[in-house]
Image 1: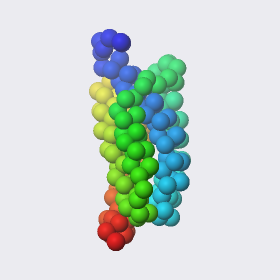
Image 2: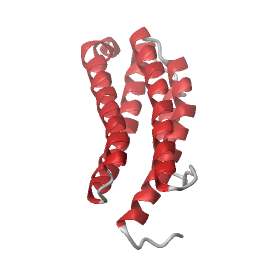
Image 3: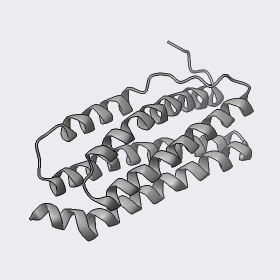
Length: 164
């Protein structure tokens, strides 16, 4: 296990964690899109997959800025969240109920990402790395918008349909 001796070191560890989390998400999103019955939900998931690929690219840019190779460290939290999502999506369910479950699972992913990106953005500010703040802040903003979009979709359509 790596010794944490500075904020720089802790920051790099968290960026590696996020890199692995984003890679896991890129594998999970196509499965969720396939299970979704709502065209709006399917579209939102597909759009987020494209954004997630951009998030991976931004993290790779952060590694380049830091002079490090783009290498993740296993993100157990994301693995658990995605395993739970997979379990929920494997249930026999009415299409609208499954869509509501997919939104719930997706928001768990988003909230984890919002917390993680919020943390590394603040650490990058402390470190005086405005170049990194700009990159990761852009990703944080996209994660927040995706969460808002999922909330609106759930409130305005999916949850009511799931009620029957």
